[in-house]
Amino acid sequence: MGNSAGRSDFEWVYTDQPHTQRRKEMLAKYPAIKALMRPDPQLKWTVTGMVLAQLLACWLVRGLAWRWLLFWAYAFGGCVNHSLTLAIHDISHNAAFGTGRAARNRWFAVFANLPVGVPYAASFKKYHVDHHRYLGGDGLDVDVPTRLEGWFFCTPARKLLWLALQPLFYSLRPLCVNPKALTRMEVYNALVQLAADLTIFALWGLKPVVYLLASSLLGLGLHPISGHFVAEHYMFLKGHETYSYYGPLNWITFNVGYHMEHHDFPSIPGCNLPLVRKMAPEYYDHLPQHHSWVKVLWDFVFEDSLGPYARVKRVCKLAGDRL
Image (cartoon, rainbow, N blue to C red; front, side):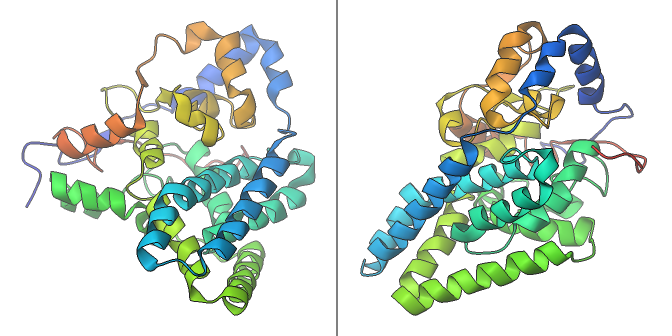
């Protein structure tokens, strides 16, 4: 059952993650970058519009045939819900209201979470800090697949299944790899989400609730936008663990494709990441980059060298400092 043609383990490295050093260097050379570390003034309005759009969609799909409901959940709802999860990613970095208003960002993430159908914003925030602080850290960065995933999902058919089930692996993996105590914010997140789901069900019946859940499962699964999951940190080229994508899908994903830039400066919101590259092109233009998230998914499925094992891993010391 092993992956004889491909990888049989992660790519273990014994160096610190590259982003910390680059950040220091770049800030010394371009102090003006600091001015980009400010909230995105448009984020709260964009997210509110998207939440309202999905609420309107709930009302519109209540009488649809199931096959059409699933079609729209994939074609429209999947794009909106996936985009909302990336807005939540930005909000987890305090991009909506700034670092001085942490509570307002937390609650706004709970609001942005509503169309996703299942509570996840508070848990995401709790784990995402580790992904930046301990990139590829064994037992710490839950973005890295487990050994079981690497061992089992090693043929094209199984890798395709793994991509389709991506939302399930993302939500269950933290509980296996690095379980953390439940926080009060996670409880609030769950209660608000449950209340919203029950209200929609009481008003319009089962179909809108299924529409929202299907939008999340399909939009975060085998979907063109989901190429970013693989594009960001899977090792397409030996020695490189983070990659950017500068294509058009950034327009609907809060510039998550600017991923080298994001890891260099996590406190800069997506709307300002293109300016980082513009300000310091010599740090980015020569790096390997992706040009199509669909091609990323295709290559991931059909190339032996790629799969859940194609990740850089390191053993990290627990840090006492905050990111």
